[in-house]
Amino acid sequence: MSETVNERGGMQGGIRVARLEDVQPGEMTTVEVEGVRVLLANVGGTVRALRDSCSHEEAPLSEGELEGETVVCPWHFSSFCLRTGEALEMPAVDPVEAYAVHVVDGEVFLSRQ
Image 1 (tube, rainbow, N blue to C red):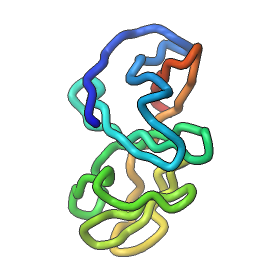
Image 2 (image 1 turned 180 degrees about the vertical axis):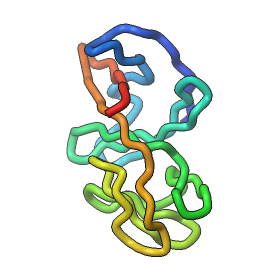
Image 3 (image 1 turned 120 degrees about the vertical axis):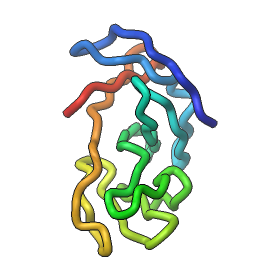
């Protein structure tokens, strides 16, 4: 599922991007936020958000595998921490942008960390 939502509000000036029910535990989806594709991943009931682009060769991370608190790139198998965006496996060495996530009344809001 890919969704474009751009409503300002929520905590700390975040942008509403999805409903919590849109991202079930153990699943990933993408949303577009101000022209940028963002990966949303639900890890054990906690939603995490990263820019949906591997820092190695810009592969769509949303097409990769969710493994606990990491996402594995579908092209060259680099992995990234969903909390921080840190590259955990080569060939990627640079992090990807991570977003702060706030869930308010079943709505998911993002802001830059």
